[in-house]
Amino acid sequence: MAEDMFEELLRRTREDYDSLGIPVAAGEVTIEERMLSMPDGVRLKTYIFHMGQDNLRGGDRAWPVILQRSPYFHAMDSYRVHGAELARRGFVYIVQCCRGTGESEGAWEPNINERQDGLYTVNWLAEQKWVKNIGYWGDSYLALTGWCMADAVPEKVKGMYLGVYGTDRFTSAYCKGLFRHDVLTSWAMENAGRPVEADYLESCRFRPHNRVDEAMWGGELSWYRDWIRSVKEDDPYWQEGFWQLLRDIPKRVKIPLLIREGWYDHHLGSALKSFESLNDEAREKCTLQIGSWNHFSMNCLEWDEPENLQNSEVESMVDWFWKLLVEEKVPEKKTHVYIIGADKWIETEEWPVRTDSIKTWWLSAEQEADRIRVHKLTEFKGKAGKVGYSYNPDNPVPSLGGESMLKTMEHVGSMIQPEAGWREDVISFVSEPVREDFVIGGKIQVYLTTASDCEDTAFTAKLMEVRENGESVNIRSSITTIAADRRDDVYKPGTPTEVCIEMWDIAWLVKAGSRMRLDISSSDFPQYAAHTNYPGIWSEQEKCRVAHQTIFCDGDSRIEIPVLKYPNHPEAV
Image (cartoon, rainbow, N blue to C red; front, side, top):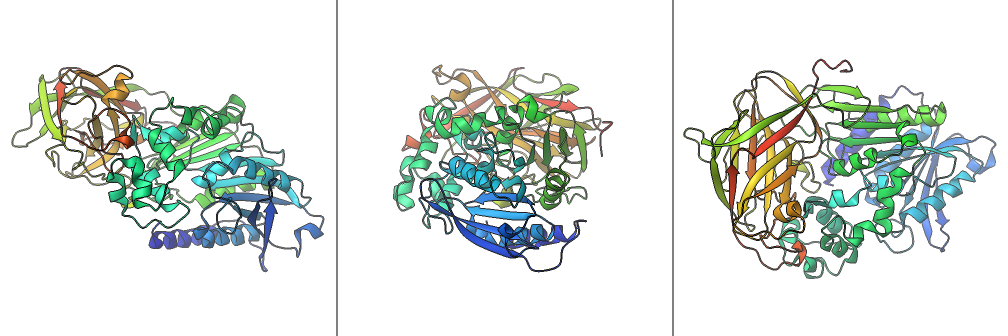
């Protein structure tokens, strides 16, 4: 994370604690540092923040404990802020360095040791007389370290607050065979266990990509190679071992959970799969929050500064743990989602909610007057015909406004977009102004009848709202490949075939007078790896070629948008 962003988060964190209504105790906060031995003898550095007693083990009082386990000890300043503020409010805060990170012993191998180390730590805590009860809290990798043991924790663990992470790792790694570079290639470079000085974008472009670690990063990263060669959801890597265990944990969880997500967080798709797979017992005690923020709970609407964003994780987290651990109340089932454009939250019984209707717009071959590469998007089947463009993997469309990005944080979220038809390999379809407000709620799907002169290739779609001032702002985008949609069938170049581009869930108010705009292309880089236009495993391919693409406006190419009944929703707040 950029240093200025980290400082901004620290500043905001302190302000958020200051605004809480919980009384603060006077006095000094004590920080104990200990090396906690795991069963195999490896010792993990563990920091214990507490207040009001010289020695936790010397008194009769038991305290509510909030635990985190982290590999990110460049963020120790943040943990010190949380530790001091939570201790002053009556909690014991504990943060532990994951194996091989910070001052913890052992080898750093992401993910693999977290379940056994985490379970040993919480079981050790449960045996301590000074521990009244335990709550686990974490975002991102710190949420992984909670999720991976959530089904086997001792009775003293009363719940977990888990943000911006999901247990379906394949969903966080791939979309229809295209690797999420901006999430996992960047993470691998920053968490390789050694300094990596190579240029990030050059690393993403390197072919064959399965040699980038040795060629540019200073040596082999076996776990990264596992990610980039396991391109299908049913590959053994995702269906066995740790990732299979993690994916199935929500089915077995019994404790209350608060799952906190952002509409433009790169783990949203995985997190919603985790929520949907919870068993009935856990679901009745689960809270789902989805706000209009990115991976770091920051507003990511370039065109708006909402007044009702409610993006303080501190306020949400402390309130939830206070009720759970101090007042000892069992949470009730709750789903709380933010509607972009309305600046309002709604409470629903479930997510995804049942929609009122599906709005369909059709891709028309009719071109707008005096605008190259701009065609009409119609509410009735429009002019039949076809539209073509060429896609060069060495000159991919740059990601601007995306939902599955991390490294390129300045381009995450809903941003003002270039003019329609802004590149030769981008075809825009624009509707007439909509006649009344409506709210998108759920997954948007784009169906295209396509053809290519290559055995495999990619197609992208980006949906935008063109506001009355003429600005286009992105709502959702996604990608697919011919091979992924045809599964095991072999594609014959030049043959018309249907592909479906499914986008992640969203809640978005489209206002009367706005136009809908749909951009079709074949790349979105570095949000996704640039398809080489050759079939097979992308990371093994040494060369690329130009693809000549055709979109058929034949009455089947369309976009389907699920509609909620808001703005008259009775639970709008």
